[in-house]
Length: 535
Image (cartoon, rainbow, N blue to C red; front, side, top):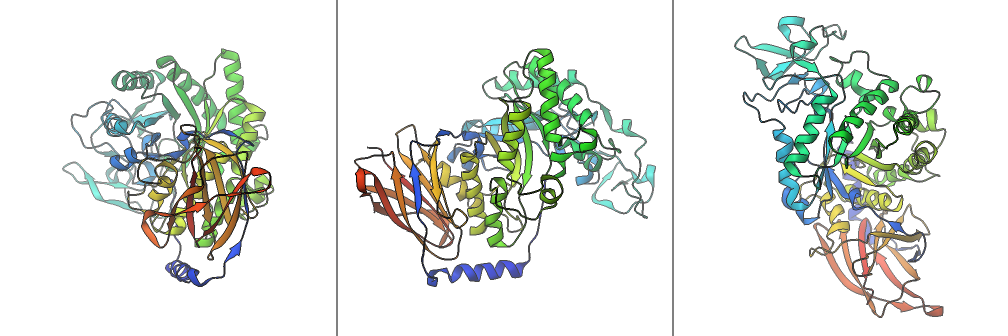
């Protein structure tokens, strides 16, 4: 997980820019759509989210396809005592405080909460060697054992003696070695996790629970979980543990789909190439799993899964930052591009290339991601457009599953990013599920994402104006014919952050040869849905 800040001055400047957009000169950028070219299915799982605090009614409204139970706090989860350890995120505090916990209770409750939406859970299975042992409040760096430390938990103390929980650093800054791991941990085992998978399937059904993730950001254990993994782990160990627990999951539930390594941006993708035969961590992981599966005659890894946090920047830069996901001409200046990739990140094509080279047939997922700067809580038009752009890119680039980390409230602008794709008219109408070739004369200013809806044959377009001026466009339609004379239009912009607003229908025109087209004006900083009925 990751958080970032930008200055309020930059935010105010951007708002002034937006407010003056109505007076800006109109530009022209042409768009082209070919409904018979470049087609591929768009997996609905790209519209997933984290399940922590997600509004259940909103999940049902957008027909949430999946949600994730994951993050740092799940790495040391012990389902038998229904509690974990917060690690370096919060003073290494463990336990829920419940004296009589229900085994697996919090996860079972989450699954029950989102089942009415038809959403399927992605469950994190701990593979770290030590997990929490008790539901009672504990912590790794007790003051009574390790003495004075830089900081102590200001809210939680232990027992009648009011023992304090420290951050694990001596006052001089030295990291403390936890020599009493067994005080509040037990050894993790494949047998224990196998029992949990069996419990989940028995309780909720195979059709509900079959996505399982091999822990969370394992290359970062030496930081987040430094008390139990003070030296961290190399990728050879991460692979070995992953193979053992993946096999246990498949034994417990043969239809299970397994995700890994689920590592962090950016170092988690890279690991230590010197210890990985010169390969990046993701490449090494795929290669080793392919070897293991060939030896054992079955597939144990179904999704190559990583986490992604986009580049930071001002509001206009935020909207452009999604180019790191695909654009071979865009270099954000990030250290990973300079030091390791030797050029633009183009992350999704790069990951697809790794899969093709080392383990073909493996699906691709980003089980934790954020593309917005975050300090406004997804509450600006810039956040909404950046998120919508990412969803369009996910569909175009053939991503198979994604989970947004920071959950929007139903009225937040980022929530409307999802509605643009999952319920743009408030009546359940969705963006199409088959990608069609969609190109812009300048995708960096006016982005277009086209898809055909197989349920009724409609052609749906989402057009995002990333600039501070209105843009007029001729949209040429190829290989799509309809007796309809108009296209329905819905728009989200800074003019009304509380709704996707229906617009007057746009007339369809005939071009030479009988092909159709339409001409539309797209307001500054806006996202527009154009829906053309097949008949």
